[in-house]
Image (cartoon, rainbow, N blue to C red; front, side, top):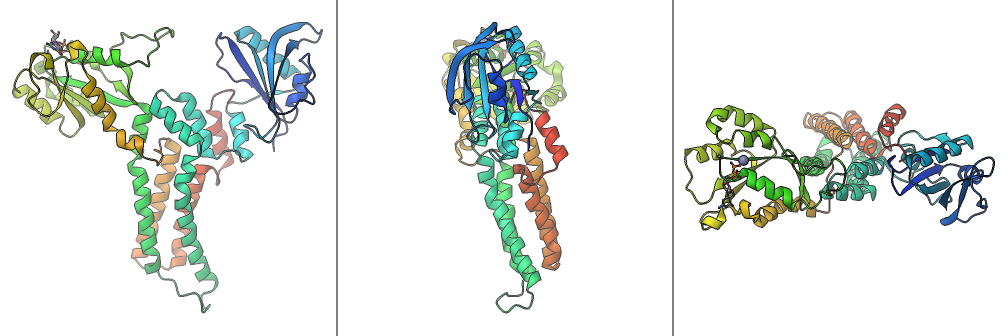
Length: 442
Ligand code: GDP
Ligand code: ZN
């Protein structure tokens, strides 16, 4: 299917200790041989070879390790060579250009994964999970991605696809052998229970979609409370709790007031916390309206009270304002008082916020524990919704006692939409677009 041998730099193009240039295709080994000083033409699969990259005058260019992987047990199911070279940008590019001169074509973004897909090594949902893994910004996203790579989406959807196939087969038999003695005349009444069952199943999956997307992208969170209850102190304590921030990575600034923090398995995207801080003494001035506006974007509210004081009018307003939101009620300043109400008691100033950390973990604990994967990919979710629409249309027709063979079209459409999630039914141009959004070298 793919005639040429492709090559790309598979590591990120920054100065690092090592870089990997990857080749895939029939001529991967042959091409590499042209620029390598040891004989690898007959090398066994899954072996590593030490030597030097040499130019046309046989001058050494870099000291490298070359890994040979022979088809079909490779990522693309083609021969793959990985050149492990010193990681400077200059030398990495230079070796890539030598590989290209020796006969390889520069890979398009996602082309390695595309080949893996076309050769049947992975389905489309697995290919997307590879990209999700590269983009994962937190534990949960990474864990969702690894399940996806292992094929969890197919496992989830195959029963639904099979159910539809059963219904279609039933209708087909009926159309082909309407008078056949052993085949009972099929009526819409026979199809309804199965259809309802199917709709329940897909609803169960769709119900978890929002959670999946939220956990993947992080939970837009707002800290709300009257002035002086300890919002800023809480924010600082949360920032300190985030052990995932590695301080020596360039561009990571811990003192960003607005940003993403990782608490346990969840990522909180703190929204406009700076704004709240600024207006600390002016909550009346912000007014209910403005607060509502900020709240609108939030998926989670951390509502903070001063635990050493009774609720006043303002506190009650905030309670009312946030009542329809997913929220955690937090009492701060436990060091000054006793925990005498239900809620999460902390002492932000003393960085004693473990009960809040536990509560955050528990919020999504159930979803994270479940074996079923959480779908979070927009394309997949879109198709899932389309399949549901198809079946709702089919159900409507059944309710109106339309003949089964006329309903088959909708059921077939639902079936195809689910298959499209796995890439088993696809449009060439759409696939090209999809893979082109992938990382270079993947
Ligand atoms: P904000 O206006 O809601 O952002 O509140 P701040 O975080 O700025 O805190 C207001 C005041 O409450 C400051 O003087 C803090 O030191 C104090 N404070 C914050 N958290 C605690 C706490 O856990 N215990 C005690 N005793 N004081 C606290
Ligand atoms: Zn503040």
